[in-house]
Image (cartoon, rainbow, N blue to C red):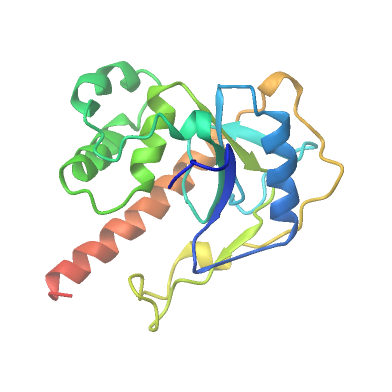
Length: 209
């Protein structure tokens, strides 16, 4: 991704369908947090479907899934596809996770050796820089990339296909002092999402796809 001509952008995967309110959600928050270096990414997806809160969004350390999101040049400059310093940095990140670091260590070890994607590396850049991700309180993006005609995820049974898509209401109701923490809600769902991908890839390798 290049930022030669812009200082911010909205990114959509080609097999997703966003609610139109996703674009205004991103536009407003790209403007609001443009100079807040602790906020590195804005997501349109919420793997919980809905998190009950009076606010339009909360904050998390998880940028997954990457179906539709936005960021700034200032944040993307910290991205390293190779994750070259992962082995040196992992011990300093471990304390941010209570009971799940073994899973995340396995994921990042796996991707640092076999660079098959780009999104894990983006999440790593956020962790390494103590960054935050804005997550909408209601999911705004549907993933259409499952099923027999898909390029990769030809499985048709995923909890993500059942996620509701809900328009965002305006004006946005902003949380106070960035203290609305969605991690406890999201981490189990992000782990479930990644475990589905790992299972699918293992099955694909087993049959020689």
